[in-house]
Image (cartoon, rainbow, N blue to C red; front, side, top):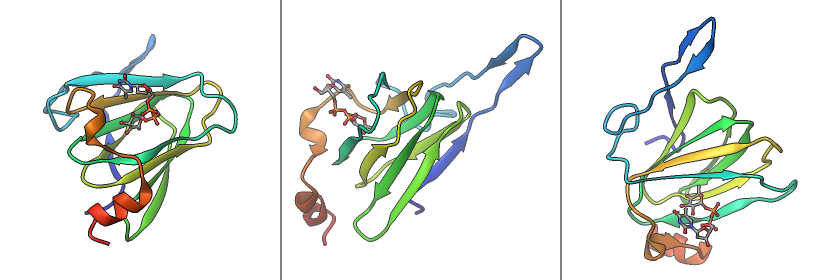
Length: 133
Ligand code: T46
């Protein structure tokens, strides 16, 4: 499975502008249990640096952009989230980092589960161990 699974959201555009509608078990390929968004990220700040055991997420920059770095222990890929119609599906044991936030970036994330700190792996050595490496 590719590390970077991109979902292109259909955009309803007319003379007034554009609208994107997202529903669970449709464009978002799971039941949406939680939505959070990251904004006001200071220049030079990176976030993430963890993996999840069970959580599935779709991340989209609804404004601005940031660079997502994904790592499954074998390979690493970077992808710019830079359009409101470009969703990144993250599932499975993947270490993720977010870098180079633009000042106007609003990173919205749809998640398959409620917040649960015990689902996080925040130590890279532990991540590699869980990945069987
Ligand atoms: C992820 C990346 C893409 C909550 O109380 N509820 C929540 O639903 C979330 C996501 C966070 N928090 C609290 C926990 C921390 O005290 O908000 C604080 C910041 O969270 P964290 O340092 O985990 O944020 P990021 O940007 O490093 O990571 C977040 C998500 O936590 C994570 O699941 O995949 O965005």
